[in-house]
Length: 85
Image (cartoon, rainbow, N blue to C red; front, side, top):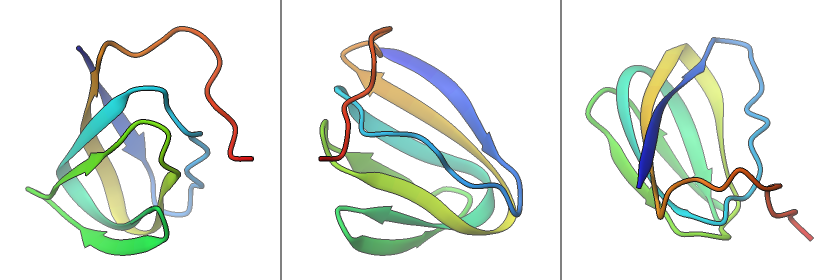
């Protein structure tokens, strides 16, 4: 397992790719929409969202600077991310 903080300011574009690891996002502050496999979900402080490995996902429509705790399992790979072919 590995963890980190992800910050996305209002007006910024989430450029993350598809990951090889399962992820758990826990929103610490801010407001945004998270699209996972085409399903949109509004998130804010206290929201927790699971994203399975290999699933396309992206934060967007950030209306208040977003700070998210992200946990990867197994630990995040240092290799290249998967592409969304």
